[in-house]
Every structure is written in C-alpha cells, then in structure tokens.
Image (cartoon, rainbow, N blue to C red; front, top):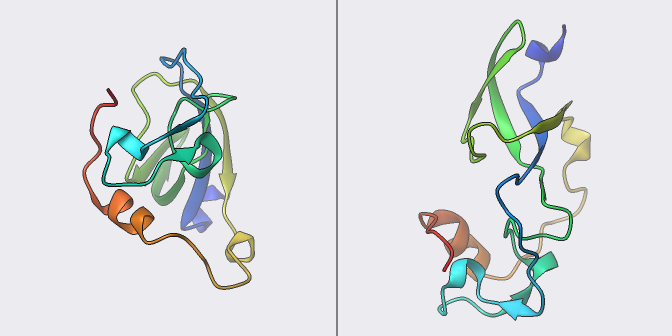
Length: 113
C-alpha cells in the first residue's frame, strides 16, 4: 500500500542461473571495443554476491503485481526486495563515468562468451 505514489523503484534479486564469479579483468560483454575492467567497474552478473539491483520506472501496482519499464531479470529470478526510490537517493554531485559506458548502455545486450 502506498507504493503506487512513487515513479521509480529499486528491485533486489539474485542472478540464480549464474554459478561463476569473474576474477581479474575482462571486456564488458566480452566486447574488445571496450576497455578491460574489474568486476566492480562492470555490470556483469558474475559478481561476488550474484545480486542485481536495477532501477526501474514503476508503471502500475495491482495488488502484489508490479509493472515496470525495462525489466532485465530472468523469469523466476528470486526477488529479495523492492525499495521505493527517492530523488534524494540520486547523485548529489555531477555524475562522472568513462565514455565507453554510454555506448555500452545504448547497445543491445549480447550473450557472454
């Protein structure tokens, strides 16, 4: 009750089909056009804790069903929590990121090799 008043939510779920943990450095999505980075600078599901915490636009709430835009989790991924998102949780300072990340986020996802 009350979640429908928010425009965005964070969803915490597990990457339940991932069994590996990435060590060392790798190209994001295995694409050599992007620099090699460590797991903390990548959005790979092969993270140390296998948790995804995406940020979604909340479109509607119908009882226990939430409709969101841009869902990227797999069907039946174990959902751990849903958190309402406050504007004050956003960056308080200008955002800094390397140029390759904008290309990464705008390109279609590919299956990791």
